[in-house]
Length: 170
Image (tube, rainbow, N blue to C red; front, side, top):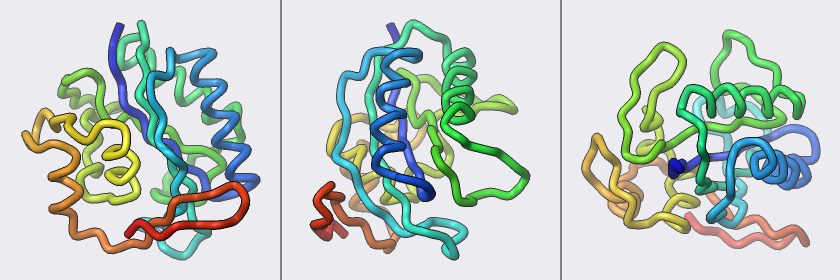
């Protein structure tokens, strides 16, 4: 089995239900969910002129290769209404990114692991620190806690509560 960390994100539709559904489908089709973070509401990163995102990190165990897992995750995104185009960082019903695949370093046309921007994004680092604070980035050789402490990302992040109450994190 392979240990994989994922980040989930969505900012259109019923965001909370989208996250609930994607967690179910990932457990059915991609692997066993070992850990999941709280859900965080975050301002859009990159293209900031869009609705806020809900984000959640997962740790899964999967029998699939990184390439096969990517195909499964892209299929899950599509089944949940995700449409891809040439523009980066656009609104989406669901985004599933592979952050880490074991301790592998993968640099192919279709897949880059560790995710090349994860150390720059608090919306990734905060939920990752919750479930894998001591995981060491295989390229940067720093754990998630240190990457979070070193981050210059100043976007607002709040812990999402289904009842509408939120707690500012950063």
